[in-house]
Image (cartoon, rainbow, N blue to C red; front, side, top):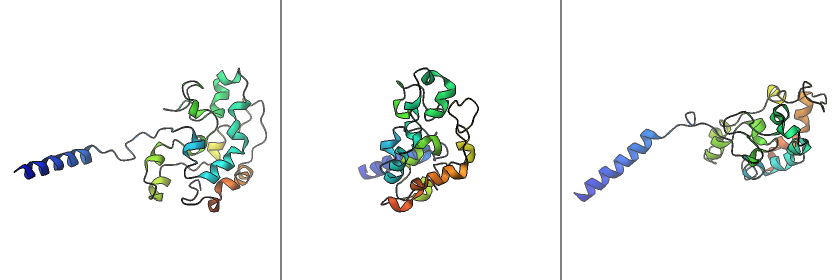
Length: 174
């Protein structure tokens, strides 16, 4: 009789867990921040290439006055104005700078997806497009504006898209 009750208890727990499990679409995607460490676990070559780009040190280029100006902050941090995104250097230090998630979107679901399920992982990131880049690469309000041509920008990121550089999982940003 104890076996039957044990089975019923286990079955009830399993059914409750399955019944309350949320799908990836139902869970809010969150920023993980500190992408130099978190993304580098699987995308070492891409992160190393990113660290060489001016975007990686975008926050450091701002003056103290600019670091409190919302118009400047938006383009020099990750997720500003978004749920779970940058709030301040003190509150969200892991989101300082223009990180992977600034272009590819929050990585919370990506990090939770099974590493062996490339399709599921790919479904959790947004490949950046020209509209994404043009949120910041615009002349209006940018005192240091340099002409931006999307196809030239993508060509400059060739190391980022080089799948042969990483062992294991290939670049997911294509």
